Image (cartoon, rainbow, N blue to C red; front, side, top):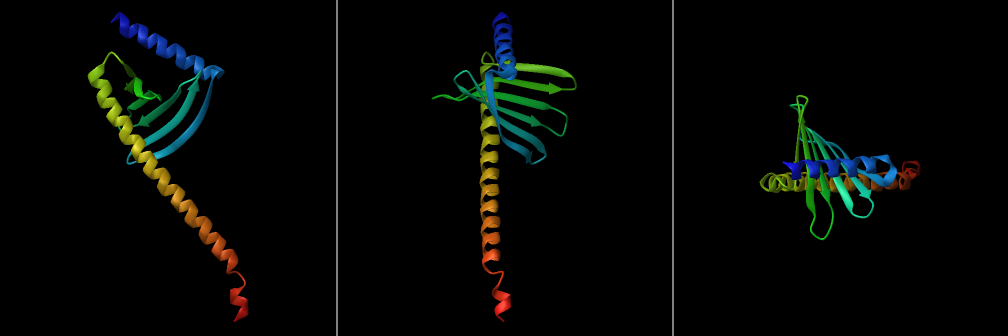
Length: 142
């Protein structure tokens, strides 16, 4: 229990420090995946890059995952809030963290797929706009 509390306090302190200006933050994704509202942000606190994935479920649960990006990326912290009750899971909860990593990776894959589709749609829109501009005067030739 003492290790869990120490880990929680350390993670919370680092996270709060990061939010107070010791970090750079970039929002990578903010949108819906299925019925879930999902936000993915990249946080750089001191050196290692961290990804924060927040998932708001239709049943009012809020899941927050923090993953440290390194040679061997790992989930550092998971917070689940439901009905005003907060549960925090850390590296000490190995079995839970394996499941959390699978869930995190599933959302990342969906986000990547969604971003790829968005990029392709944007390219197609740009291409269509370009072709429309190129063909604007063609009707005048007839």
